[in-house]
Amino acid sequence: ITPLGTIVNMYRLGVKIHENTIRSLHRGVDEGKVPRLFRAFIPYGSAIEEAAEFVATNTLKQRWRPTSLYGQLQDLTLELTERAEAQL
Image (cartoon, rainbow, N blue to C red; front, side, top):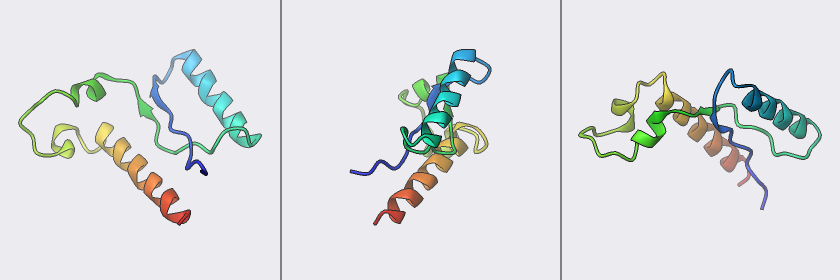
């Protein structure tokens, strides 16, 4: 099975250990040790946990602003789909 890539999630911008880990992942990609990273990084935040809570909205887009987590998840989904289709 060929991996489609590496998803960076649960990171916090400005946290030194997270930034170091991302730099290390980029080095691993350059050295061929880690599958390439997806462009969309999914940050740590309460919105992910709140997704499990029932609320009266019809779509994730209604629940999350298009420019926030929804947009990042949409970007990740589109890129994942593109990579999967390229391997068919």
